[in-house]
Amino acid sequence: MDKFSAIVLGSGLAGLSVALRLAEAGEKVALISKRELSECNSFYAQGGIAAVINQNDSFESHIRDTLVAGAGLCNSEAVKFIVENAPAAIEWLMNAGVNFTREKNDIHLTREGGHSARRVLHVADATGAAIVRALLALVLEHDSITVFEHFIAVDLITEELSASDIRECVGLYAFDIKTNQVKTFSAPNIVLATGGAGKAYLYTTNPDVATGDGIAMAFRAGCAVANMEFIQFHPTCLYHEKAKSFLISEAVRGEGGILTLPDGTRFMAEHDARMELAPRDIVARAIDFEMKKYGADHVCLDISHKPKDFILEHFPNIYAKCLSLGLDISREPIPVVPAAHYTCGGVITDLSGKTSIHGLYAVGECACTGLHGANRLASNSLLECLVVGEALVKNILADKRESSATLMPWDESQVSDADDEIVISHNWDELRRLMWDYVGIVRSNKRLERALRRVSLLRDEINEYYANFKISADLIELRNLVLVAELIIKSAKMRKESRGLHFSLDYPDCGSEIYDTLLR
Image (cartoon, rainbow, N blue to C red; front, side, top):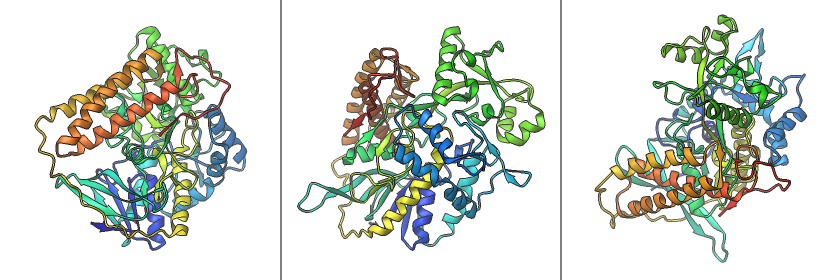
C-alpha cells in the first residue's frame, strides 16, 4: 500500500494543474493515468481557452454569453467566479510555459459559437496539446509527484466518520494494466479529474479513455450526480472512413467557415439568426435535422473561400490531417457529422471541487459546478479546470486532513479467470450503439424507455460478470460506462421539456420551471 497526501486521478489539464499546485506547496502527490499521461481529452482540445483579456471585452459580456448558452440552467455564482478568475488562470499558464499564438506582438483571440466577442486564446489549432505538453514537462521533473501510468482506478475506499452518517474517502484500488495486479492507495485527499463519458456513444470526438470512470466511482461511493442528460454533441467531426473521430475545431466556423448540404446549399439561416456562430446545441440539431431531411450521411464545412496562407496559419493541423486523407480544405469543403463531445453534468461539487464525501474532490468534466448549465459555451471547459482546480488546492491546503486508516488489500480469492471475454466486447458495442440510436441529439419517451430496458439488462449482465471473474481494464471501463449510460438515460427521462442539449420530441418546448435533475 502506497501512502500520499493527495491522489489525483487523470492527467488532463485539471489533473496536471492540481498535481502541480499541490506539489509546489510541498504535498506528496500520486498522479494516476489510465494510459500515457498525454492521452486525455485536454490533449485533443483544438479551439482554446476563453478569457476576457481584451479592453474591448468585459466580464459582463462573457458571463452573459455563458448564461445564454446554458439555456437558463447555469449557476450564476459559478459563472461569475470562473469568468472573473480567468485572467489569473491565463497568467498561470503562461508562467508554466504555454506560448499562445500571437499576431503583431499581441495574443491572437479567435471567436467561437455563442461568444459575442473574440476572447478565445489558442495555440494555432492544437491548444490542448500545447498546454498538456508544457505542464507535463513540469510534472515529470517535480520530485513531489509520483506518476503511475497505465493504472485504472477500480473503486474508491470510504469509511463512515465516527458517531455520524458522514462518509470520508481514505483511498482507492487501482488496477495495474501491465501486471494485471490491483494496488491499494491511501490518502486523505482524492481528486477525481477523470474527464467525461463520450465513449458511451458510437460516434465521439473523445479518446478511448473517456469512459466516465470518476462519475461512476463517485456515484457508487454515495455522491449525487446532476444534469447527466446534457451531452454536448460537437457539430463538426470529420466524416471519413479512415479518420477516427477527428474533431474539426469550432474556430473554423469562427473564422468564416460556412455549413452547407453536400450540394453546396447553405442552411443555417433557416435555423438561427446567428447562423454558423450559433451555440453548439443549435448547430448540432440543425445538422441532424438536415441530414435526416435529405437522407444525407454528412454535411459540409467550407473554409476554402479563405486564402490558403490564412488556412495554413490558423489551422495547420486540421489542414495536414485532411490532406493526409486526400482532402485539400483550401480547395474543397470538409465532410462533417455531429459526434458526442462533452459531458455537461457530473458529480455535484461546490466551487472548490468538494463533493458530499469528506476528502473527495472532483474537477473538470467529471464534475458539475453549474458553470455549463444545459449547454457548455465553447472553450469554457479548460477555463473551469484551471479556476476550480486552484480553489480545490487552496481548500486541501487549508483543511490539512490526515488519514491514519489501515486499508484492506484487494481480495480476489473468490473469483476465477474469465472464461468468455467476448461478452465484454459484444456488450461494449451494443451499449454504444443503443446510446447513439436512442439517447442522441433528438430523443423521445419511446426511445428512452427502450434504451433503459436494454441498458438495465446489460448492467446486470456486466455486474454478474464482474462479481465472478478477475477484472481487466476493459471490464472496469465497461462497468463504469454502463452505469454512466444508465444515469444519462434516467436523467433524460426526468426532464419533461426541451432545454439546451436535451431535445425531446414529446416535450418540444422549454418549460418555465428551472430545475436540475438529481440522482443519488
